[in-house]
Image (cartoon, rainbow, N blue to C red; front, side, top):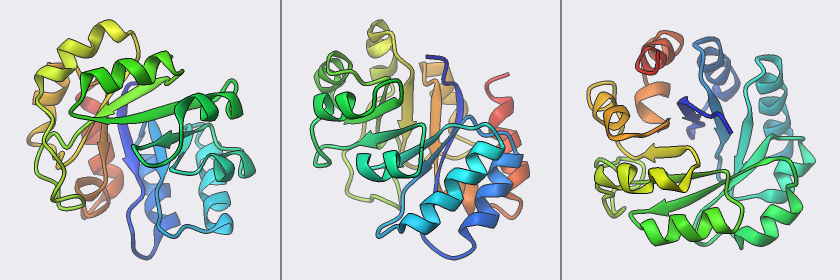
Length: 195
């Protein structure tokens, strides 16, 4: 599966759809709907936006919601359900897995059917300040897994080049994208890191 570029993760707060549209216009590679609590109506509107721009939408933590809104797939963390069961429910769709700082967890996730794995927090994160840090050496070590590797946690335009150089295929970004004065332009700046 060819997944490479900016992986935008929806923030909390107002104006979600306008902000998501700006990110999509900026050329993101992948979009994750992550709202707690999210609603079916809001998720369905985000899914429609993603389809308009032909960008895969991933739903965080909720395979049922992903299926209900026709999303491209789902992403599961440690406490969000078993990957093999999710894989069976999502035939032909994208399944991502949070692997934190754990290469063995990533290997197990790929064996269970994950299409990509995410490592992080790669840098200190305001979203998850207590998250264990994942060393950048994980990306080279995980390359033999043969799936796209996502980096998450505290990513900014300043530190992003080091992640791409380390082997990250996807940069999962919330704050540095959606708090930017011009979301569209910020997304384009991230995109240039992969060209």
